[in-house]
Length: 373
Image: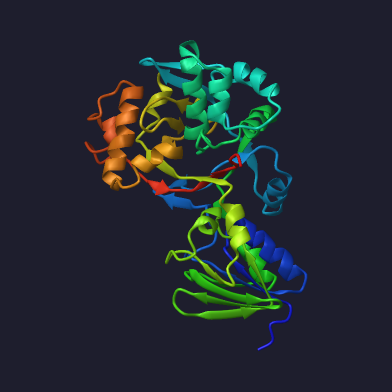
């Protein structure tokens, strides 16, 4: 069988879908192999009980031309995610002016930084001493608990760029799901062939020819291969049974991949009977704390009884072995202390009445951030 002008793409996340469509439009024979039963990769939109949940990617971070172009093509719209930022600190829940409590003081020092170093080293150098303990804790919480990075490795210069960007964050109306569906349809109309539930385990290659073998033993051949699977998969040891082995091995690419951060995340989606937080804290958008599940957000400016919890960074490793029930207790305990509500109340637990709805999705969802080195 001739493999001329044929390309295999591993991964059907948004990157794989965009690449597949463009290549097919240029006359290439494109085959997409996906380990999951559906496209989307780290995008996972769920419809349940007449509510929509984004278990994976949720926001559009900043004014991204390609993303907005695709959203427009799909006939979708975006909305600026809004709401006030609140903080639970010292036993008090209070509104804070900016996204980061010490952002202005931190930004001033970051502007003076010429040579890169880890965020942890930067904080120790510029904000050492007991009188800056609170600042160090808050910045570390932001880097680890929001960006899913290790403060001992994350780049201080990259943090400076992040804070200086000052761009809005958006949501796609209706979620990312319709965008993925649109791109899949576009690909199929352009002649792309999809094979789902086909985890790739081996790739044998040479110039002008590649052979891909899946977990079930299926073999696919093409002239070229495009890998759009996650950074975490690149970082795995090639001998790991869940990894992809290349023959010949791609040592340089794996070494390069390991220079980037890839932090673990547990994302909690809790749907309540009503948005109980609106009573005393109207317009709440983001909520930061020092609790076990430290970061929460609402669907502001939209009205929804959904609270999303975000447990990220090195702290996650302490909790990954917990059962879903134990993770639920962790989240409920955090909320009960933040809002000063007993964990047994039906508003929080959703266990007392049939009318109360509580949905928990505790998903280990990888997030990336560039590290030093």
